[in-house]
Amino acid sequence: MIEHNTRINTYRVSAAAAGLLAACGGSSVGDGGGLIPTTSLKALSHVSVVSGTTDSPPQAAPPSSTPSENSGSPQASSTSSPSPVTLPPSDGPAGQDSSRYTLTFHDSFDAGLDRNVWNTERTDADIAVANYAVKKGTLKIWPERGTNGEFFDRTFDTDGRFSQRYGYFEMEARLPKGKGVWPAFWLLGYKDGRRPEIDILEAYPGGAAPWGAPGIDGVPVPMMYAPVVWNDRGDQAGYTKVATPDMSAGFHRYGLKWEPNKTTFYFDGKEVYSLQVSVSDPLFPILDLWFGSASSEPDESTPTGESNAFEINYVKAWQFK
Image (cartoon, rainbow, N blue to C red):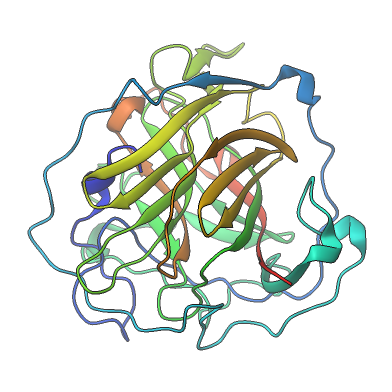
């Protein structure tokens, strides 16, 4: 994430992973099988890129704990990932030549929440209440107060279940709105002391313009997101800010083409940012809804409940042929 080390805390990812994971969390969502029809997308003429590589965001203090090592092969490493699937050309990565890719991971949530694929767990689970569900083929994560009256984070990841080096990663989702909400889709790895990270999407609806803007009801909606690349903990390679339509009003596709010496980010199939960088560790996907950072802190004005969900249609990954 932009505040990379803020997320590296005491979240335990899975029973199989010993120790604490930096900057992520986990849940249980698996290979749902069939594809969900793609929702109509906003006109790409409304998408613009606002460079942010010289406007370096603040850094948080490094974590005090060390995550467990996660072994895996350099390519599509997984203990329970779906077998490669052949899809029609229209079902390949948005804006890409699908004949150049092989599907290696696919969850459209049609079969519910598969706990053999995703992790979700909290060290302070005693305060947690229901704040996620799979309904009608989508994973929904929404703002909610715990039993202590405070908003709490929810994270889903595939640590120990699926990781991959290089390829194309894509999520189709609708974002929540409101002060304090901080939705994200990102990749993380940790091995031999390294902590590389690629943030495909992180948004701050409650942040100062142009991050967010008041909707018709006065509640701030997400109007910008940031792709970010980290070579290692505290070593940011670059980032940018992508201005968009209201991302809480409909579904959009957020993609990453990750090559040995280059990362290219896409919004609804349109390239929005490219960076010459070498990230060579296998990384695993993460979905989360956290609070704070540039989105400010949630308060009484922040909409809670399922109607204000971070709603994910699917998560997919492809490897280059």
